[in-house]
Image (cartoon, rainbow, N blue to C red; front, side, top):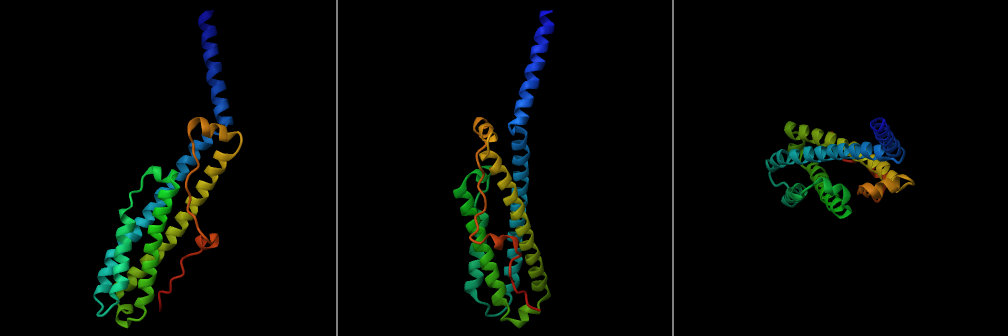
Length: 201
């Protein structure tokens, strides 16, 4: 009799705990945390893809006589800076680290855009098939970066709304679910539009 009562109390306790956890957003935190991590991994993959294109792009441009050395140097330095930043899971919860990462990636994007604009002044380079192929790959990668960033921004927004809303904010406090850092953009419309880079004809 006593064993049956103890078993019933245990089952009842487990059911109560399960229902209370699901009702307070615990499971939603698990889902959105995974969703955010997955979206962030895709952002990193696309940024790495872009960084991997740079050495071949630079090597191809170096073959062009009298190409602007300052432009090439800026690309090389920006890539070195962007790839030197250590990105850890904690970066998602650190606005300063996220801002530093974003700034470095922005510098690389600007330097690459400048290189492509300058390349328009070199007909032989524009006619180089290898360079043309790299430009197409770079354009595709920039578009993938935009898509990946948008997915991450949306995932973080959902997570942060849950962590700040009642009663799920209580669950966030109990289990330590802090708001995650997001990309900051001066012009929100810019992030949903593909990068404007003129690749020539």
